[in-house]
Length: 325
Ligand SMILES: NC(=O)c1ccc[n+]([C@@H]2O[C@H](COP(=O)([O-])OP(=O)(O)OC[C@H]3O[C@@H](n4cnc5c(N)ncnc54)[C@H](OP(=O)(O)O)[C@@H]3O)[C@@H](O)[C@H]2O)c1
Image (cartoon, rainbow, N blue to C red):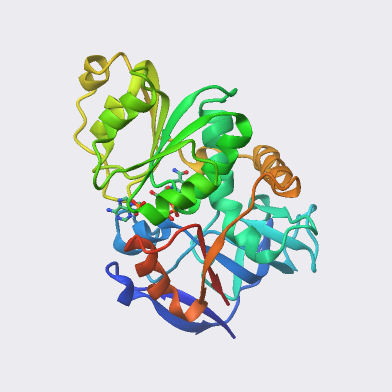
């Protein structure tokens, strides 16, 4: 038997329950991984609350983890039993001691990267890889606005932007989070719970405004984010921490300066094994060189997944949060 977190109805963190299950054997093209560390991401909360529908109920939760290959299905060529691996995509169910998923979504973990670091950065780090290196391939010299800059994704974005020579203005909700984002490489920070973000961006950029805004807060920040852009600049809306952006009149993009907008996802970028490997190699290279350090600031036992989600949803955490099976 193996333990996993599952939910039979959507709702608050109390719907999460720890259950014993018999681990399934991997089918063709699949592997079973014995997780050593599991990543907790805001998207897990969207599935738990029902904002994103789970394919069926009861359902497992989570898509990120790191561990050791315990069993290999037919036709899998790049992985074998005993390999150290990590993953950030695939079916819900990573909040578990054992998880079965397509081998195409799994990469071999370099010896230099420990399991906790991997669980703290596979989903968030690959996300920053595509945001800064693909959605808009930043060359250096750009000014960007990045919301929730002290969070899991934000902490990685601050460091990666500094490495690229990009001026990242990070929004945060407290002085402590501002100090953290600046230590991680944010060029400037704004407390979006107290300050006028558009006016502060105007001051900081001498009226020029931003080349790109990365907005994972959603509902609360959408329109203000558009106001922080230069004419013809790019709005990257990639999350809904405050609720989804809906009811948008596309004409607003004209009114606010012939803007571009995209709503990307990791699955849309790491959509083939080749692309996943290219992105993971870039991320692992950043880690190996010491240019990127993952701050696994919050560790919870697997059984306390609900408590861990409450901490992230309640804006109490900084950096990455992991669950330990
Ligand atoms: N599209 C993709 O491919 C993709 C991939 C990964 C993550 N994401 C998105 O990126 C965001 C960050 O993910 P994460 O896992 O690293 O989480 P996180 O940043 O560690 O936590 C979310 C942060 O959002 C901020 N926030 C603002 N308004 C909030 C509200 N009403 N409720 C809760 N938090 C609020 C909080 O920071 P402050 O206290 O400083 O405001 C909070 O710490 C999420 O929106 C997630 O969905 C998208």
